[in-house]
Length: 145
Image (cartoon, rainbow, N blue to C red; front, side, top):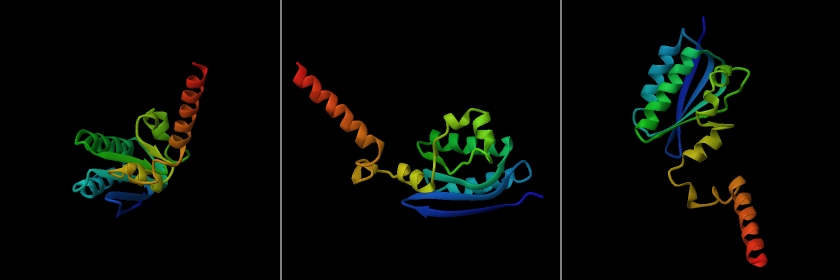
């Protein structure tokens, strides 16, 4: 028998639902019910899959339905910590390219913040180096012209 453990915590106005164990047809209804209850009062949900040992397509259908519901309502439904070895269904179906995937819960929570430009979050990481590169190109163009 497959057993899952589900837990919820709130971080920065985002509900984080953590899943541990195997997600399959046996417990997909329990998973669906839990996600529905956890996401009922919020527009930002992070699903932590870092402790999932197996995921079949019935569980993937639950994930997709909750993602669509949140997005259709103007919210966010982000996945965190999905490991290819255990959640292959995401990649096999091509959904890994469509669903918002983050390496960690911290990354997903940061992306879900209502106003991420309020501090150092946007000033660090890839976007900062991209801005520097475009600034350099603009400077080169100005000197060349």
